Image 1 (cartoon, rainbow, N blue to C red):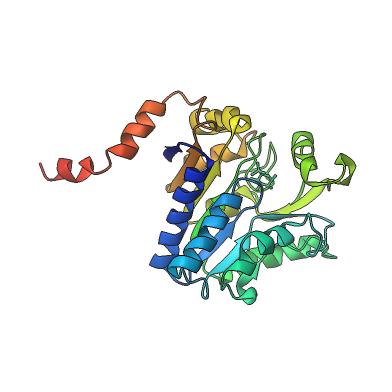
Image 2: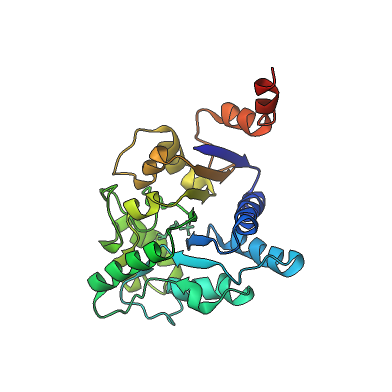
Length: 263
Ligand code: GLP
């Protein structure tokens, strides 16, 4: 895992958007895996700016969203579908036919999950998966105990997740109790992973998933087993890490690798 600690939320958003933009430049028909929540809002805003001011082209980009609340129609203002269109898709030139988001009000979720996995496969797999992290360590909605081999499926939400996400709803009772989510196994098949996190309330879980033991109780620890995972944090989310100096040294001295091999 490569750990980049930034000064604040804005810098975290800019660094992560730049990384995504570079990947889109490298492969115009890239397959992105995208996340929702407060964390990526700044990253998406920055991507919109890069699209508008620097011409970043989304016309061939395909995207698959991580998850969606079960029971919410795509037009519901708390649905992740609504979130994605409001925060990113409607501001860039992505082809709506290339946008895949789990459908919360689908009649047969089980069959839908199989279909969703097939579409990811058909697209050639996810090139870059963007992730946030829940306070219980979840990626997508892979709550504690989710198997590292899990695929897209319906998952029951953890109490802490319901409480955390209640801020988006009128009252806690309105938060759906289930969601459709890509599995940990689905996420781990992405060629590259970018996890972003900010704020004091993510400091404990960031220390646990970066420096703690691998466990399905904190599904983000699965990233320790991925061969290309980038983690970009703001100062607050990084504040409980033990090896901050080392991560910063690596970030600032990458150029030395070239010198070393030239010896
Ligand atoms: C939800 C989403 C996750 C997201 C997490 C953190 O539970 N399913 O994909 O990473 O919330 O959200 P926030 O960025 O708002 O802290």
